[in-house]
Image (cartoon, rainbow, N blue to C red; front, side, top):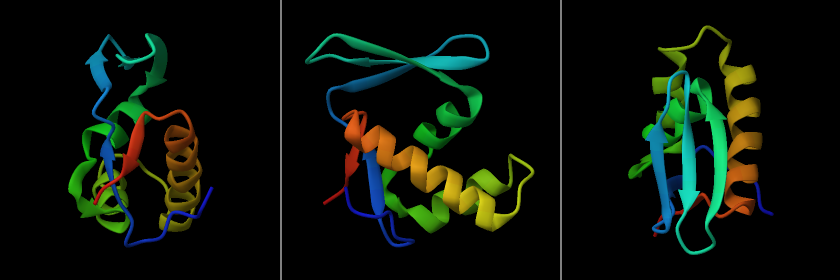
Length: 94
């Protein structure tokens, strides 16, 4: 796995769909039938991945919703993004 850079652009994978449920969401991978549950933080992150915004822009938006310093947000969401890439929930745009 390669690192997530500030310029990395991510998007929800074509076979992934997100459905809000209470205080979080369920992600379905249509090609495998895998289901993932995620908390509000992950749901907010996924909702901002539009294939145009850079990782830095997404983190800036997230920072407006959650109280944490930018270094913590960058580290936590970079780790989350790598995990979601590995699970094929998201992919690099372009």
